[in-house]
Length: 199
Image (cartoon, rainbow, N blue to C red):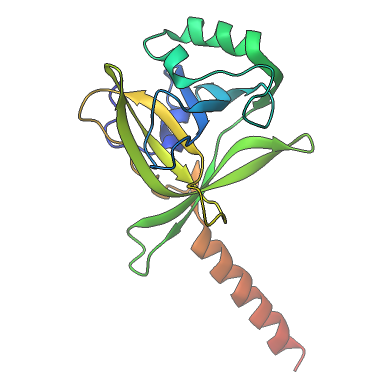
């Protein structure tokens, strides 16, 4: 599972089927672990995402799935487990991302991925830092989600990678990843132009 330092939006748009897991960071160490409870399983290929919402929204829900149960399993085995334990499924036709960069414009500091569904419409989730770690004999890397909690880290979005591989934030490419800073700058300029017209 060579990632070549790509970001998650790029990996989800690759023409290779891949599994991603959204997990609750059970011990708040911001690292993937065997005891992490899986909220969502995402299976992607060519930008199309099939999402499986697992069990309930709280610990101790009737049906749970943990990372230890999927480590070492192939995609078809994970898909079968996700289908058996999902309380709902959804699709996103094309995974895209919006990135916010630092002052230089060269480094992504935050990324929003269109991988969720809210009120039957695709929705973006925000990620603010990177993570990687080992579970049993497999390696995982990905992102840490934004949270406003003072007592816990955000959920992790991870996928299996080859030993020594990392996942970086995506870089704006104008196709699947757009720079959000530019969008905001254009909106401000547009607003300033309208105000100037009415003076």
